[in-house]
Image 1 (cartoon, rainbow, N blue to C red):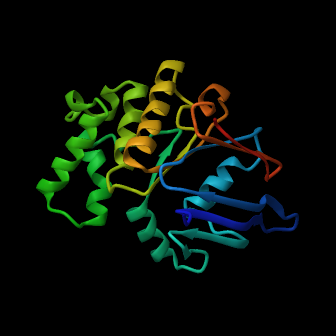
Image 2 (image 1 turned 180 degrees about the horizontal axis):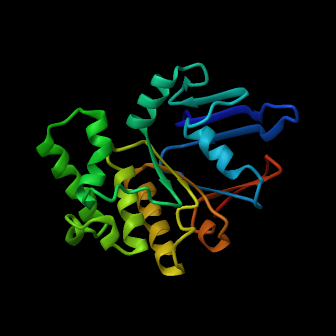
Length: 229
């Protein structure tokens, strides 16, 4: 089976008088339906690797392939279009727009893609929120929600355009244990039932143990890649 997402010999260096190597010699293949945790100590390059895999950053050397397409030489516009269509992002901070309702926040990526009518976008956003147990909160604004509810809305927004891959950077960092587990249970369901790949950065060993594979980084290098039994 060909990889959905692949890193081949990826290196990322921050240029300057004293160049800083964020990640180096990264070889990684991600298959549809995989649930992967990127782990490691602070400053090990976890978020840097996630941003490279999510096409938010461009490698200094090596290649990132999405569905077999080499992305490193694409223009900013091409990368932005690819992210909008193929990738969904969840961050530690939910970045919901306070002036919009829950439903309207989830519709934002759909409106950017502009491929469906307003009615269809509303129906799809409603269905996604219902699947995440948020049907009673459609018309609430972010400041009326708990932290766990906001993060579930952020996940719903990431799912708006039916992405191939969901990438999450410390998505449970501001949540208590119960809500953190709920977020990872949602990710696991997306991988097993929807066959979407999920890649998440986490510092929590109990949560990383819920994933299929743990990629551990140390000093920007993959130190281990453990597969769950």
